[in-house]
Length: 319
Image 1 (cartoon, rainbow, N blue to C red):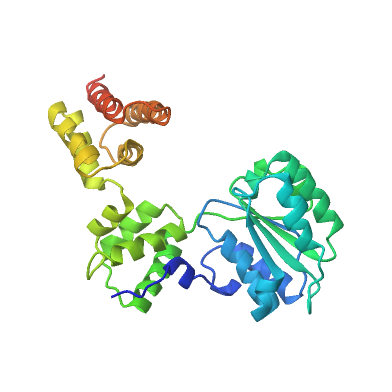
Image 2 (image 1 turned 30 degrees about the horizontal axis):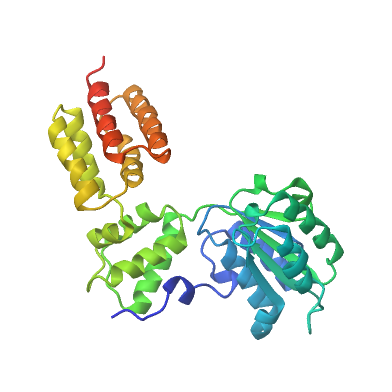
């Protein structure tokens, strides 16, 4: 039986050298930590690639057991107004660190801060640079105002490589004593899309469903359609068996309870695997994009996906 607790937190690295991937960033940050200096930093990149973990690892290495007293983490998507900067951030920044030269303030999802809050933050970064360093974490650096970007060393994180994700998952599975099939690792990779946190959560959820983690349990936990099921549905639609394709779609929507957005994402993935000319693939991708937009606007998922399957039949027989 796997141990209790959240694995993503239990196995979160405490040292920079233990962080998976991002070696071009880790090397630079290790040099700052060794010299006991740190500029204001801007971490930009997709979710689950190690931005918050890196900030926490810096705090652990600089402050040791006293890191909690010298590290403030705020989620800017929850506290995004100017009062957060004027009160919480300023009150923490103005106090002197005991035994260290500066404190660290980590603003997660900083791209959610309002423009007024960002301008207030710019002034705070200047005024308290002798007692505090700021680490801003965001998904889109373009949403951070230029005056803040110019005051930070920018580190651009990338989605983790499959080899790094699998190596981490194997290590966790070994530590927890959980048998995992090779196909299950592939299913986790496809579902997580480079997000390490999501990959670990999927592994933990699948481990709670049975003695062994399999491909089927991973897809059930991920609430994503199995690629084989979507591939069969598309093949039926393109071969003129629209009724069969429609029945498969109804099964995915109602019997498995999948969301229309999840199904259309897998349809998009499977288009590239179809044995058809590239010109037809382009047409299908265009159609998939159009119907995905309709779903996000609130259209009926079943009607829209049935219409998309009909488009697959038309494209197949176009000359």
